[in-house]
Image (cartoon, rainbow, N blue to C red; front, side, top):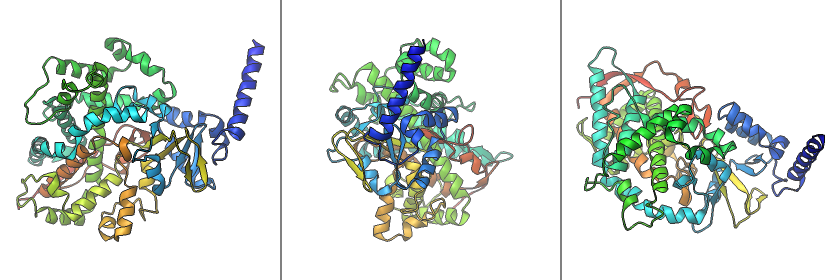
Length: 494
């Protein structure tokens, strides 16, 4: 036995020496413990529940390389907005995803989890049309119907004692109903469910809460995928909602000739390659779409209202601008009309800068040596960046922690372009978020509808309710989830 212990000690010592002095990333600054082991990352992301991002931020402040630090034996993190485009390169430059990063998704077939650059491109090209700007413009009337239901709920609340609304319930119901109708041709009535039994949200949170555990124990993903649903639900009860949802959907055929081109119609089209129509790809793709289009979009809306309601002069100024396309408070302009309004567009950009979307992206340049400020990362190195740190970087965004839409209006063309290049809530390049047009449409139209029609103030809501304390794929506060409540104080009549 002691022989094996001795051999293990020798192996670990030799591996540590190799990683510190002979590894291709050995010259990249960073903590020595992080260079020889993933234990620091495990401790802060698994034990402390998604807090390694803040340790990485401290590394950038401490080590002489500044924007370039080694955060685990295989990964370099770069906090340089001007270098983000190199990490997520386009134009035929290949970027694989990091297996270690993707293991947390509990998926091997969906677009976000495909490792190989070429494999991803082949599959994505078949889905791009249904998520294109043209396709999302065509579903604007459907989104407007969902928004009208939220407006009715707010009107009802205004006419009741207390006039308090839990916007998390409204926004997650809205985003879940929108994405299910866009996906299947029918929504599942989450906005109409006053008990708020949002199974998509529950399952999404269950999966993201386990993201870091799955990253460090990747064998769990294939193991769990082979377990019977009823058995897995004994350990992960919220996932039962997704299985129940799938059963409800499967009882009825996909609705066709619905007036919109749905995701399921696209995936099951006979003209599609067999790998696109495979049950595994369809199941995992749909699950990812449902989750990714619900909580992150809802969180972006929550952040938008939270910030704007505290700046009443801005709220009223925005309402005046909106009157150009919404003469009556109940008018419902399209997303294309709203994005032409300068202040509305500036607010949209600033809301995205504070949004809770995907945090750290990791890419592998398989055919290039990447060089950032004199530090070379050879082909095959994993290089990462974090949207949160980029969005709070003082270079493109002076006074970054201040919610200030005017920065987008007052910047000269050079500075404006610099800020746009550093605004990366959907990542960038050929592997960016495929649903960014859907999110954009929802955020523009929901914020416009609420601001044009209602006056409100925060109720039982503090900065802690929307704090960015934990990285669980989406931003989370110290405990629980983002939540914003408001008290309605008025309804616009003109």
